[in-house]
Length: 104
Image (cartoon, rainbow, N blue to C red):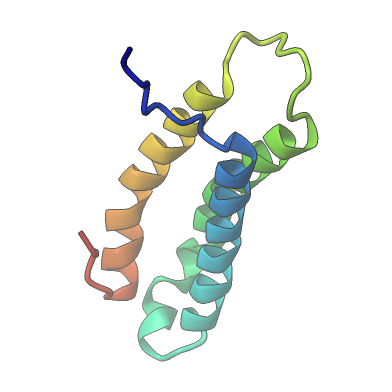
């Protein structure tokens, strides 16, 4: 008999983590926009915050309705993949904007 080492993913914790990450990004960007170098890109801040807020609200919606019947057909893992893919695309741009090296 073989033992399956697969463990279920705690989607609720994953969504909470992504939401906290989005909040952290927004706070950090708002702090950095007040610095002298940050004034160069501060005019873009509302648009960037809106983009990050979209993912934060998406995660919050998943948290609020966790375990409910999913009428839209997307399962939690598909929503996480969507959020992760787009946040990963946003990271290099934000890192360049604030002059922070992208961690690997």
